[in-house]
Image (cartoon, rainbow, N blue to C red; front, top):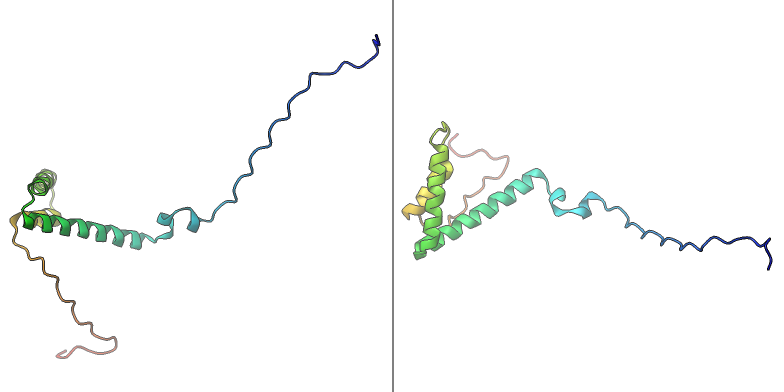
Length: 123
């Protein structure tokens, strides 16, 4: 037996190479929220709320009791919160208007726009 032979270390398994990281995306690709300006997000939120309120109005006109209860619950919550408020209660008035049923579902005709550079008649 050869005693001068080098003693081998137990073979170590090579670690797997780490997975390649994907290239970083620019902010436009990461999310649609970042892409929209603050004003656009605000307008989108207003539009969604208007659609929801119009749905409430349509369902209350049709006589949906669940929606009526939901609106009444919202009104009581707003009354409690706004009882100490000095500012106007536009949201509360809007929900009260929905409950009263004194609204029309007809769409308004848009106003005629006055072209720029022309003065209105009478001024």
